[in-house]
Image 1 (cartoon, rainbow, N blue to C red):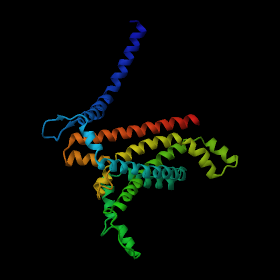
Image 2 (cartoon, helix red, strand yellow; image 1 turned 45 degrees about the vertical axis):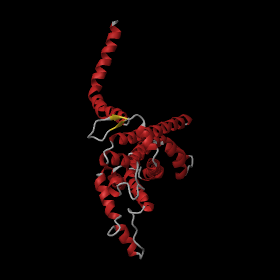
Image 3 (spheres, rainbow, N blue to C red; image 1 turned 30 degrees about the horizontal axis):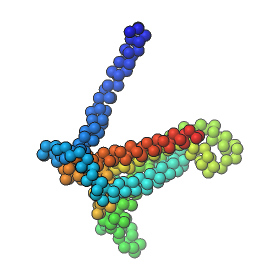
Image 4 (cartoon, one colour; image 1 turned 180 degrees about the vertical axis):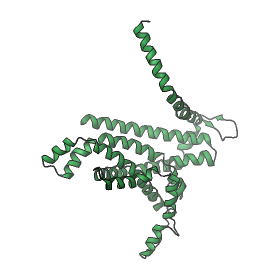
Length: 295
C-alpha cells in the first residue's frame, strides 16, 4: 500500500471515528427498531406468550378488513386538507411578516408559539373550547341564539375540529421557515422588479413564490410526515372516535399494540405506515427535482 493510499485510509478512519457518537444512537434507536418492527410483523405476539411465525397472515388479515381502508382514507384526508392550508397560509403570513419590524417580531412569536407548546396542553385547551356543554364555542353560539353543537361527538364535525387544531398548531412553523426563505432573496432582484413596474402581486407570484420553491418542497415533505404520524391531538380530543371517524394509522397502531396487545398485527400496521410515508416522500422528491430542473 502506497503512502498516499495509507494516508487516505487513515483520514477516512478518523472521519468514521468522529461520526460514531452520532451513528451509534441512530442505529440503536432508529434503524434497529425499524428492522425489529418489520420482523415482528411476520409473527403473532401478545407480549406474554412466545412469538409464533405466521408469515404474511398479519398483512392478509389487515387488508381483508374494512377498518384499514377507512383508516388509510382518514390519514390521507388529513394530509389533503391540512397540507395545502398550512403551506399557502404559511407562505401568505411569511410574505406579510417578512419585513423587519418590532410589530412583526411580536406577530411571529404569537404565530410560532403553538408549535413549541406542549401538545398535551394545547389539546386539553381545545378539548375545553369545543366541550358540548361548557365549551367556549358553544357558549358563543348560544349568545347569538344558535343551538349548541356536539363538536367532538359527531363524525361530521369531529374530523374538521381535528384538522383545524392541527392547522392552527403547524402553520406557525411554516410561516417562520418561509420568512427565512423570503429574507434570503436578494434585495437587488426585488428592487429590479419594482423599477420595472411590477406590482406587489406580480412580484409575489413571479419572483418570491418561484424563488422559495426549495423551501416549499422541504416543508411539504416535513409537513406530510408530521400529518401522517399525528397522534397527540387525536388521542386527547377524540381517541379516534366517534365511530373511528377521526382514527388515523398511528391511532390504530397504538390501539392494537397497547390496548389489545396484538404486537405482530400492530407491527404490520406500522410497516404499512412506513411504506406509505416512503412512497409519498419519493413522489415529492421526484416532483421537487423536476421543478428545480425546469427553473
